Image (cartoon, rainbow, N blue to C red; front, side):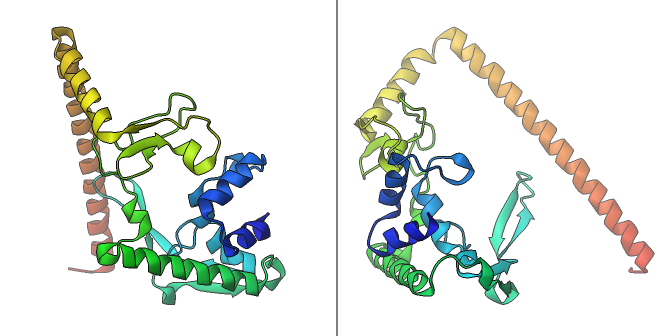
Length: 239
């Protein structure tokens, strides 16, 4: 299946078309989930995605990225390491993709990146260009499958599962401006009722309390880390 995906991409099929084809055939994706374009194309800088996995050509790479903790959210964030920090081990027994096919895929990927860079001012990467940028981005769900409803053109929303994976029959689309107008009109009409305003105030207060509790816990954790560091410095004889 991996070789087939490489061959389809090298012959001109897009990651979206490949995902739809595999889902239509009932081929299970990683972790038994449906295929999506990102599963196939991934991020070439981080080595993610089927088409960027060097293990398929008998090369095992460690330390490609590191994880740091965001002091504000407490979440781990992946950051790429310089190529000089990578640890590469050749494992030829694990190769399953011929070198010629791998190189054909890499050539097409490079050509695609050049085309995207030339068509976008500032050379914005395609993964960055897909970030939410509108009022309702990330909040809409398809009424048929429950998947995300996302921008499928410059002006219309549509079901992501139908467009990118082919696992939903809902091909309906809606203009972004009309949808936003309808949602805002509904909020003005229904959320200004006294009982709704009361609930909003109560939820806002609960949110403030949760935020304050999180900050207090974070501060306590930082203070413990600072005290531990100072103690370590004293034991090491540092001033």
